[in-house]
Length: 324
Image 1 (cartoon, rainbow, N blue to C red):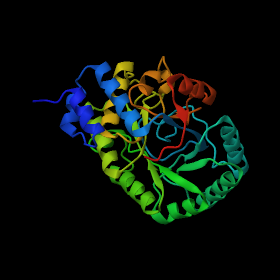
Image 2 (spheres, rainbow, N blue to C red):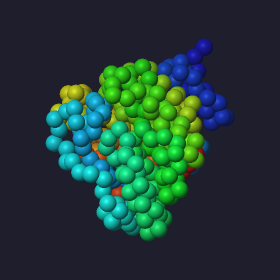
Image 3 (cartoon, rainbow, N blue to C red):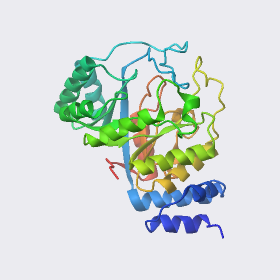
């Protein structure tokens, strides 16, 4: 006999885990019931704290990787601005601005396969300066680095590493061919070995199946990831996925709810593509999501921090760091 949504939720609330088959069965259940149960799980494990962060595009364009969704890939003709690694003064100025707005985390994101040794030293200097000038937690997304490189960044003051898996192992080769799924996993393992916490999620709406989405969440669960960015594809002209159809608001809420069932104590973080949603993600924040990237994304406009803070207050959340 198959479990009802209520039975599955009660099992998760009691500390149990949902299997792949059970998650796929839940994906076919009535939407409102599923989302309400997911929100109950969120409240139980995470309370009303909302982990809000901002990102800065610290190095832009001419990336040698061929990720089919990305405007910064050198393989595609897109109108993306190109510039080298931002200097310490500029990065600190951005950090101070976000800190004054009430943001708790600040993530430095760079294009390319990985930072060079020289760039890494410059980035470490910037992180030290940010930590001296603000109380922000600093997250880094510097590509496919190794453990010693991550140790350098941790010593400078970084506390978290971001490296999205993007999708399931099965679907990944359809999205990127210049590096592998194992490269991504090795990066996350190296970051953890260096003593950094992990932030990893994916992009939904690239043509993957529901099975792929569930498999992504299960991989993140196996890795023990507690910060899970969920991006919804923003099809960018010039990229291979430019003509991809957007996911419906209902489908977005359904996947968020499934992620909450599978990752009950994680920060499920709405990221890219939120600006496409008429309610700016409000429905997802009532369906299991409890974190967001606020402000502009890497190459697309986002939602202002001020707007997000007002929405959080309306929904009964308060800004808070969450480590799971």
